Image 1 (cartoon, helix red, strand yellow):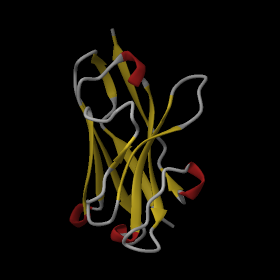
Image 2: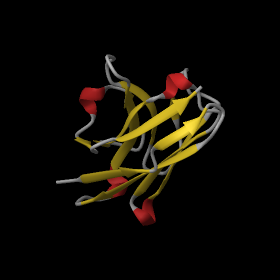
Image 3: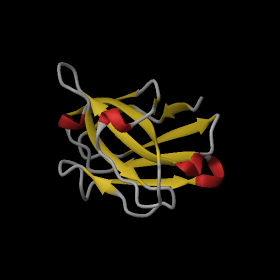
Image 4: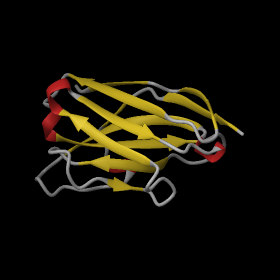
Length: 127
């Protein structure tokens, strides 16, 4: 059973930055395609960013492209989300998720493809 624990959320003013971390345990981290999702009040959970086992081929939602950067450190079993130029519309609970990668080319933005989820960390951006 893979466990994921997010941290790094908080309250920040518009234009500010935050760095989210997600530490995993209970599995072989490099076997998993890692993603970040978010859910704002009254809205469905949506894809934010994802990255493959080697740290390459990052994928981003259009709404965060050029502002957010996903990365991973397999030695630390950790995936990161650097969020810059934050906007009030980025306010949400951010979730880390792991999807078992069947190949080096595995790729998915679909919630249902992710096998394990963290408990979430709140990000609030004030205007």
